[in-house]
Image (cartoon, chains in turn red, purple, yellow):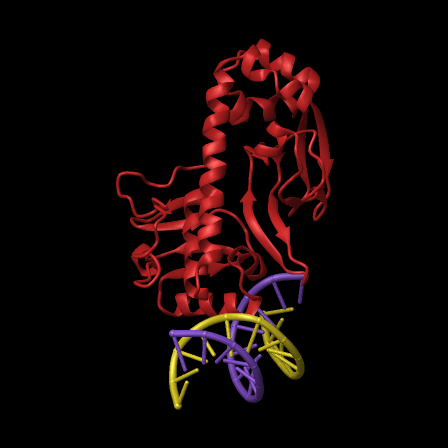
Length: 246
DNA sequence: TCATTAACCGTCG
DNA sequence: CGACGGTTAATGA
């Protein structure tokens, strides 16, 4: 489990199996039950959590009890690379959806990686850029005024992250999410999420069955007052760059 | 537990 | 005023 997780980890891409084995000596495997916290926002970070199996959501907790989801994650994934690198506090809470397995790499072992294995430096930069872009989209979503824009943008981002092609133009978001999850990701209430999603279904833009969303009509998700003004290129609509398969 | 609908109400353009 | 979205309640799967 430990080695398999490290092998699939983007940060360690390019390392020989010997080098991976030396990294593994410093790492440890932890199992988490469903709906349990891996770490909490504000807590000091002393290493990197790598998701090997299961699913995790990263979110901020608002004082009113609501959650603002920053990202839904699935393997292979590293959680919160920034605090892992600078040793400061976690910027979000990580909670498992289901029983999950994670590898913990202490900062002591993480920091020297770029010097010991120069190939990881590029990996780190790529990963940081990815995280930054995701936060950018999150910020864009929360800045949007209308619920429909927030939700469609969140769906598009999910489609880029977890979309698998279905038919000629469709995509299935291969990540089970309740309406509440969609609401927490979009910054709206559960009922509003249901209203918008029901509307989109009625219009034949999406289909949902047992917490899996399928996008039938990509263009139908575009909204004149949202997508056209949006300064962020979510790249979902770029024909030359189809969503990468996971 | 999750999803859905409807009625009601406040806010804002 | 009217659209939008949050609140609350009731109901079904």
